[in-house]
Image 1 (spheres, rainbow, N blue to C red):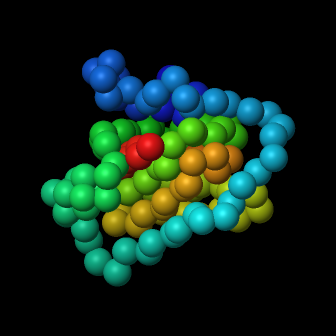
Image 2: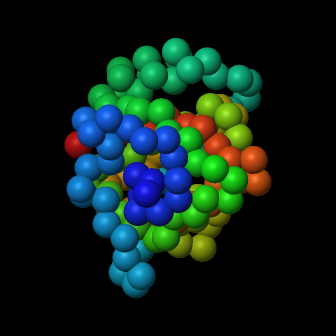
Image 3: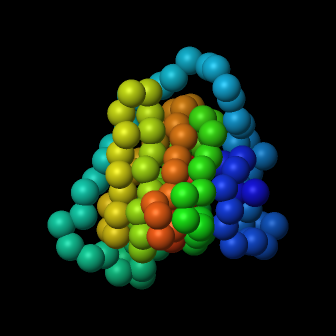
Length: 131
């Protein structure tokens, strides 16, 4: 199981697994205020990603999903940052779909309902969580 209640991903040490605060829902109010999509203008090194996340107060871990892995609509009780290192992932919030590829980043405030689907070749990305 992935950090969002579905998908795949490499097994992480217990301390790096997603908190039990991730919840999967089939029908709940959606919240899209405060979502930030940052399109990369150039390649971003992994060391820059992790340093930036740390400086912004996020605890982060590297995650990989196989081709077309999907996550049902869910929500977290913490702010979340998804920053793509390789591949592609689509995240849907309300009626808006964001397609992230290498270097792209999406910031989701706590309580934002979202679903996700990895691209045809899978995706590797940093997940940052901040309370």
